Image (cartoon, rainbow, N blue to C red; front, side, top):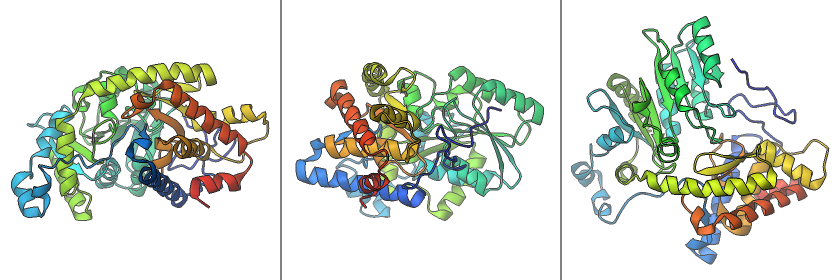
Length: 424
């Protein structure tokens, strides 16, 4: 097994759940939520003052309702909803994920994280062994790691197929294999390794769960098969808003017996998609167009060349239809610009967040780092969907440079960074 370090590049301890270092500013989920809400407020104020076109969305997500005027009259209560929409989204979900209607069942939940929570806490028990398989440089998402821990299961993570296969041979097949084909940091698992992992010999009780939140990117940018076309999968989830038109929701598909059991608990705890979400997901899946993602990817290829020339080829990397720089690298770039050799007072999630907030406040460029939910990867992520083409490579690169310059100015000023991240 390739173990992840207990500390980050600068010696800060890694939180075992979110998988990155907590700092003195973003020290818990509470502060990350506050940062997210502040970014939302900035967006709202900017739109009210300058109009909707003053914000450029480079988040890779839409999160709109997905509803058209024809649907709204039938959402006035559950009675017309049942008549017109009930049962219409699940067939589209099965098709979207490449599943077989004769062997699989679908459920629409209110978030991918909700799907991970309810699925993993339902199928796992205390003492169960779980193997995680994620691409090198990435990690299994915290929304999966946390419920695994809540269930009392034992989690081991692998970043190469050779290590996974060796552990499988030495320790025996686990109760669950969870595969993350694309991580939050936009690291991508080689398709051949993905297929090999699904083909490993299983015990009678072994299940395979694929957290394929970024399936749309796999299809549109990497031109890979849909989840259930890759191999033998028991359960999987993808997002209705990551490079899909939205709304935010989890498209959950799997074996009927498992989906029925998990679905019962989801309904019990109120995790199912509500009426507007349910209808919006149907529209998003029906209208899904991989060509849009491919086009965004072409722009990303241009941007990564510019940023790699500016900051180094090992720092700026292509994360599907977008470009990413890790938070640790963002810190090092800012330190180099400052001529600073001391260890930074900030951690990666704070540094990447500061650059994202500066880009939003100064240039109206909205990235995941500003509005991400707690647990999202501590990286500067510039997704070209949906608004990259409105800006162009030069303006995006200039905004990144301004954001990093701002970071270099405040590297040792925790109070100033806190004020910009949290409004304090």
